[in-house]
Length: 259
Ligand code: ADP
Image: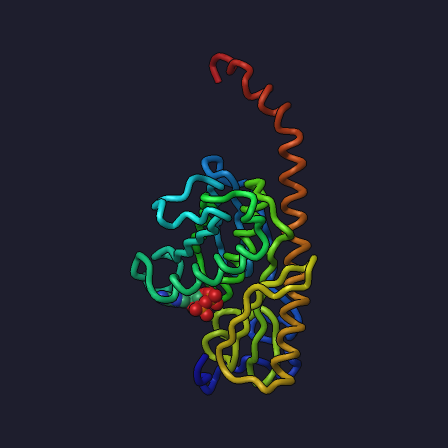
């Protein structure tokens, strides 16, 4: 958020945004489930210029032991932005922002996981942002819930996430980098479509209550679209898995000589 450079028109005379989108249009979203063979579950998300990988391990015994909850599992998330993910090299390692994002994503996911099924365990979720262009917490949460489902962790539903905000006095969905930098407000949302619950909500900037309500409903509509893409990714993964036994049998065949 901040002052717009005088020559930067975030919304043009036709009501289009810098990248040509209308206020209620989202950036293109692609999700692939089960992309990593070492993790129990994984997902890769490309959302506009964002590229985010999520990996899940567990439920597994929680260490250190003093963190164990005798009644439920702990969902522990680690959000990290690669040093090459932004224009200027980002200093590697955790910082206040990554701690905050890890915490809110952990809390959002805890709401949907049946943590009571796995006392004393930890479900570890790693989110690596490979390329960032605003909205990485939404992309990270979206990827993480697909990775949890891919790991077979029992959940009430997926969490779908999308932001809305205000640029040039217009409420828009899914802000890109310049809109995030020079816009007037940003509201990331985490939504559970099956129950209608909001499990992540933040707000940065100024909005009237009407604009806020409009932003929330636009972000919810965005989440519903994200949810469809998440489900499609899991269905594709399921189909590949179902066919996988055959592929493994083929893979077990001895390699032909001279290949
Ligand atoms: P989100 O990525 O969830 O929108 P922010 O609003 O904090 O989170 O960040 C917006 C964007 O600003 C990020 O997606 C990224 O492109 C950029 N950004 C964040 N932190 C840094 C940083 N340390 N260095 C450079 N760019 C950053």
